[in-house]
Image (cartoon, rainbow, N blue to C red; front, side, top):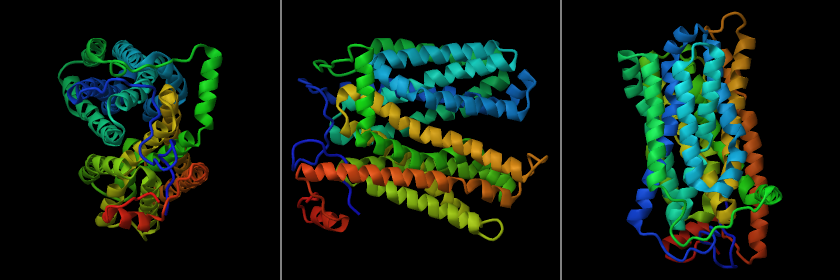
Amino acid sequence: MTDLTGVAGRAGDPGDVLRRVTTPTVPRPARAYAVWLVALAAYAVAVFHRASLGVAGVQAQERFDAGASAISLFLVLQLAVYAGMQVPVGVALDRFGSRGLILAGALTMAAGQAALALAGDVPTAVAARVLVGAGDAMTFVSVLRVVGFWFPGPTVPLVTQLTGILGQFGQIAAAYPLVALLCSTSWETTFLGAAAVSVLVAVLVVVALRDAPSGTVLVPPAGLAEVRRTLALTWREPGTRIGLYTHLVTQFSGTVFALLWGYPFLVVGQGLSPATAAGLLTLLVVVGIGVGPLLGRLCGRWPLRRSTLVFAILAATATAWTVVLLWPGPAPLPVLVLLVVVLGTNGPGSMIGFDYARTWNPAERLGSASGVVNVGGFAASLLTILAVGAVLDVLTPGASADYSLDAFRAAFAVQYVFWAVGLVGVLRHRRQLRARLAGDGVVLAPLVVAVGARLRGGSAYR
């Protein structure tokens, strides 16, 4: 299987092609990593805020006198705000830069957590989580823009993967220190403390974060008309759209499993103990940590073969789910372990979508392109969460917590619709990019031939 992505320069130059504006000075590695660590800290804190209410679900029900359905609404609404803001945030990112957006995101999340700390009713708490979702939406794509400007092209995929992986330590901070603080102090103290963490990150961003190395010349959009033109160009670029469909097709299954429906499927549907189910969800995170750097290395070394990785992740995910859903009765533990291992590749695989956006768009459109890509997986995740819940409710009326295995099978079957949509999108836009490459005189050999050539030290592209 051939791939055509990653090339947008002169014919015969199929390397990494982030077409950024002139950068006269190359940043020192130490300086680049220092800036990245500040941006990474901001992203980890955003993940911390994202997960903070989930680990305090029981206390939230008691404080707001709300049922589980009302608390789950917080998650759905937060995802909706996050996905819905990606394109506006991307446009703002191209205009105001990463530093301004990360700072605004940190302060917005601080306001949201402070409001949640003082909230005494569900509407106020919902408004607080909207603020957290909005601030969260400003952060990740802004950090990716920092990576794109501060690191050389072949290094960017690896650093992007590391960003996604290390940022998840914010979720660990939510699961342990925040819960410990909540149990030992009070709701107000815990969430005001969370707000204070975001303020500290904002100060760090002001002091130490810079958008790009010294000497980088950027031309922001001049006005609203130019913003509209930039956004239209971003969307018309097939490299942006293949990134969106890549993010969609690789991310949503693992996200839905980890965020909401995996635990009840394992415990209620498959009959596992809570401890075993929790262990499997932990395994999913561990696999992602291990796979991410590998995918980053492969994308940097084989920039024209990224869609092969996408198809492999999609095929493995759909196959693993098919085996589990068709298994007569509860699946054996080794089969469920295999499913979780495969789902662990979904998060790292979705990062390939941002690499497409980076290599096919000029630097002045990098923010809007990343924002468009980020819509794919989160919109699909949100729709899948709602669809799975709707199917379960239809098949288990009046017994919301007593779902059968057959009900779970029917509910998780909705994933095939989104896999089909994503696959068609990737194939369609890959074909468009292939035609562009052919027009530039770049002809890609079949994958087997390319691998053989690389092993022999020759060209892997022709």
